[in-house]
Figure (cartoon, rainbow, N blue to C red):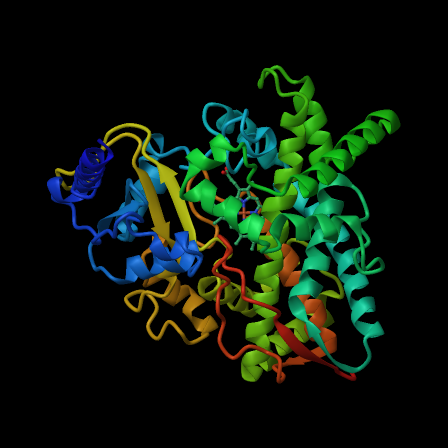
Length: 491
Ligand code: HEM
């Protein structure tokens, strides 16, 4: 009996996979040949390559405007053409308003209620309110906090002597943890004084590339059914629970003191009482605050440390930048949200850093209704996940000649105009873009400027010559430390 069953099962399996893997061929869509049983995601499933690098390699392997792939057995599309990206992200947003990630309250209540993962219609209602945290007037107010924490960073550097080596990733992680926790919750995380600050430890729990954290990411992106079955949360529950406790404590203290700081906590307290979002109570509020920390801390910290890394590798760019900052400081004597706009070379350096190291190396969207690709007869079926390779676009020689070279002049007004707008997407684009982009740029600009006013930074023996992204991260996180040498300048 068993001898008879085995060939039948094998035959059924073969038929099942053959049918799935014919999906794009039968629709006349150019595709990348899948491999049984991984589709096109073998190296990601086996933790050999990060999702971002892998999607970028698929982008690179084709010249088509869009290509069919299989995320394991799910037929999906990579869109390459910037013209079409404009449709997906902006013009036809109504067809692509959710992300294709698992967001189910009974699997991971906090995760499902984070803005990044949230589905419509709730996403829309929450986004319009949460966006207020980063209004222009709020950002202007936050500069004082960033400046103060930037000074704590300078004292910390001073304690290390006049010529020392330091892992810039850890330095930047301390800075961004303090900044995010202070601007969001009104709490001093004290990372520069306390090496064991519980906030820094929570950040490590959420983002350190432990085997469990990697498996979580793989489940969410590749096999959501397993995450669903075993009720696996996206982030480490210990880190999340710590932040949850802190959040409720901050709410209680704020309500008791009746002092308004116009920060995230105040906005969430008001939302709880508002009728515009019914049932916005309990851990739905905590989810937004944990989201604020999770989405802001690691991305900003990585962008900041990659900036220092690139500046250290390019002494001529560093000198030019320092001249600009000196001139700026002699004129203004302080940083404000408005005056840092005049640091235009610093702006170019940071833009080029995010081109080469986009924190989130790919974007994704879900097709919410059957959609005809403009100027073609191809119909994308409802439920098809869409991938956009930010890393692929940023290294495409068609838009960035000699893409491996770090050249801030790519971001001169003239050069920006000469490229398609959607070939640069470090913060995504459209209604679902990054809400913290202006905040991240402001923090990085102020803190890079503070460091360069007092220190020369150089590559040392321990500095990696070439960046290798960690295969276990869904962010573009470097493998290991970014150690740099800091030399005090006698101004
Ligand atoms: C250099 C730093 C940062 C980078 C590179 C970055 C990048 C991104 C990208 C690429 C997206 C997806 C956009 C899309 O799908 O179109 C995103 C979304 C998001 N980011 Fe950021 N981000 C950064 C900093 C921040 C900060 C500081 C915060 C808040 C404190 C933040 C909060 C968010 C949120 C809440 C979303 C989800 C938006 C939504 O789905 O509506 N990010 N970010």
